[in-house]
Amino acid sequence: MKCPFCGCPESKVIDSRPTDENERIRRRRECVDCAKRFTTYEIIENVPIVVIKKDKSREVFDRNKVLKGMLRACEKRPITSTELESAISEIEATLQSAADREVTSVHIGELIMEKLKEIDEVAYVRFASVYKDFNTASAFVEEISKL
Image 1 (spheres, rainbow, N blue to C red):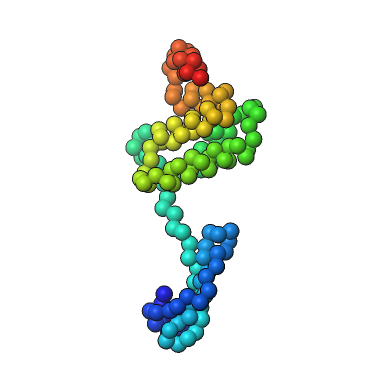
Image 2: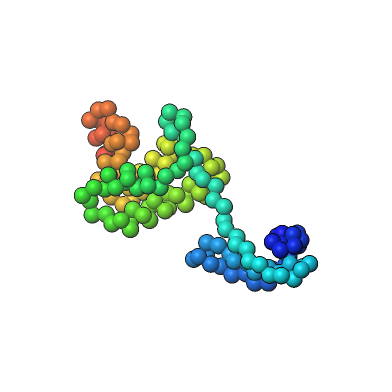
């Protein structure tokens, strides 16, 4: 780490501790040349997840879009916001842990349907009816029969 006082490229870490609910690390450093002390902060760099939509356009993953879709499917159902937030966090963790930083909207839709199936079958069917774009009543009945 370059010293902000003399420009020396060498410094030693004197103290290191987490801050901001363990999201950053605060480091006290001392320059090996001028012996002045300074503070640096280290944060995790999050590489955004890029969603490849059906029309091949790309956009950054938006947690709020997932929440809106799930809220619509769960309307008037006995599902708490905590349950939805937890499900969305699990979906986002799954996407973050994947090696590829690009994911299709189809894959995200499937992850959402898996979570909704665990939470509430009616919400699952509602979401699936829009997501899978059923053209006939028999396709809709076939999906319900899978439950």
